[in-house]
Length: 281
Image (cartoon, rainbow, N blue to C red):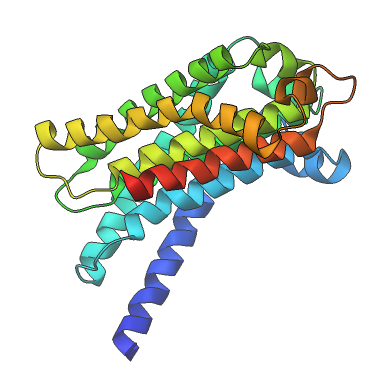
């Protein structure tokens, strides 16, 4: 790396952190119902910490999509970074509200995070933010696209993420909303793993050079739909192969003290399978 490349990298890193700070401010303004410092320091709120950590991770992935790819020169790179970075911040915060109104529609997320310190809700919020960050990363990377193609792929990605949440609720013998509202952390962790896995598949499907709507949407839909097919198969694999001596549903939902360890295995199984699908498709 020569001096010019090093200077360019430093300037882009500074630009990234300016956008990251802007994303934090916007998120704080949108959630005036709580004071982040008070909740984390005075109340030691682990649920909100999970949700905020997920948002920051999703924010890093979202803005990072504007940095990935070949450089076009420092001026053009900075212009792209701030245009797509601001777009990414907007889309990520919209994703969180979609989660609040659709994916976890049966209760209010902020009440669960602040009033009840519900770590199951925090885990799902973490999963949604990371999954959405992966989708946004894929949507804004690649050559040949623009803000409209990025937005369209994000919209389709969010629809697929909502569909994945519905499929997950169908394949689990328990109601995910009821279990999470009961402060079942294990149920939230397993659900979060399935959402992140879906985000990986959709994000990598979107991470292509744009050629035409017909070709790219067809390929994108084929790969993304494979993620929905993956969910019941991976759960069966986890239940029958990875944990053959136990019933996954019993461990997560039918015990007085849900087994968070079993939920971690379920979540990682989804995420690992998502990478395998992306490598093979």
